[in-house]
Image (cartoon, rainbow, N blue to C red; front, side, top):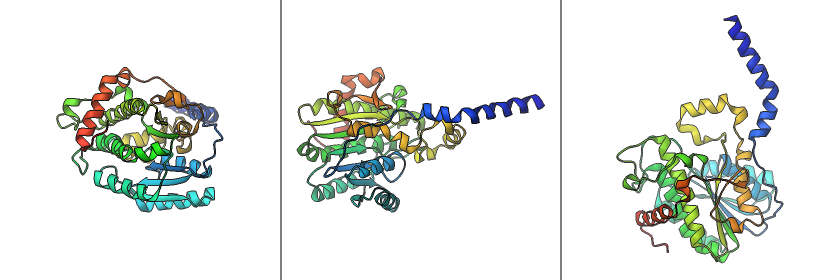
Length: 316
């Protein structure tokens, strides 16, 4: 018993000593561009908290007019107020957007298009993770409906405004867990078999396939698109999993802060010279490898067509 206690004490003492080095290693890449954004318009979904909030803060500090598009407007207003004070930028606005309801998505887009003549950066950041089985207002499995279809529809509705504002960018927040995702076309709504962990992975693969196909269809328009893995980040995304919440606390030296997690989104939104890499996947502010399934052009095209059918839109 004494030996065990001694070993545990030594282990935690060692962790305490090396923690600063561990944190620095796991912090990952940093967006180093000095690009300023006066006169530019940005929409960020889910920017009332976590990575999205820190992304909004940085873009506002560079002078952009930033729209925080979120479901919880009160929390959004709180975040916006904090960012306005922090950045001295009064142009941080909050608008209602519920990605689990296509009526809300269409209402947001209609109001935004009536309000703004330009859109330079769209960051599809919001997401859900590890939810118990449920369906959106339109009958889509929640991970698929929010993480993929909701952003698919939002991008479709805002795309013409992005084109007239070119050069413009679309950033889709995905995850490294796309490597274990798979698109089950025979059971997209997970009605036959459901795992809340795998459902999240499947939706993150869909994000990358969407980015890949979108880039192909946007060639020559001046609008480019990128998928990003933010890293393992301390955020509210894991709130549906008690186990993950516990692990995040135990291994906090290895987990990124929200500010660190925002860096790759910022890099893909701002860095000069990324246009030839449209459709690619980034992690720690550099292009990185994707799974074979994420490189399958036929799957990407089929998912695009199926998504259009589910949403009742025609997007050539």
